[in-house]
Amino acid sequence: MYSSFCFQDQEAHSGRKMHCGPLYQFLWLWPYLFYIEAVPIQKVQDDTKTLIKTIVTRINDISHTQSVSSKQRVTGLDFIPGLHPVLSLSKMDQTLAIYQQILTSLPSRNVIQISNDLENLRDLLHLLASSKSCPLPQARGLETLVSLGGVLEASLYSTEVVALSRLQGSLQDMLQQLDLTPGC
Image (cartoon, rainbow, N blue to C red; front, side, top):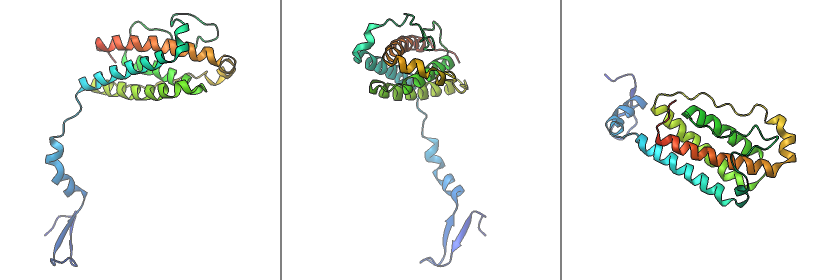
């Protein structure tokens, strides 16, 4: 008598051959899967810090970003997030989502890789949050970005410079916060 997830193949060379379903295959692999360890959270945190440093370096390599202080206020660009003294993981994710949305709306080729890096950084933050059992809410981007099209078109260069400068400051704050083990 055979279990319900196995059947016999009458046409096999040996006369009787067993074919078992996915459950049997999973049970056979179970000892191997049991020994696979999860990525240590310290490695994820280290990777997060390394990626932040990489993004900051990329921003530094764009020469025109050095001309504006991240604390300087620029009229019409108030939608670009400023610095936050204490950042939780969810606030970090929300801030990065806004920057990513701003950067993807800019036509400059300078920001494409930085935008991709921000997406990877957000994924790492999600891993850190899940390790702490912190469900990150869906990050809200800028609802008003579509209506800012006129501002973006009129001042693409200024928007890029201010966004990258403020992003750099925010990333440096995040780097410090990660050393302090931020909350949810």
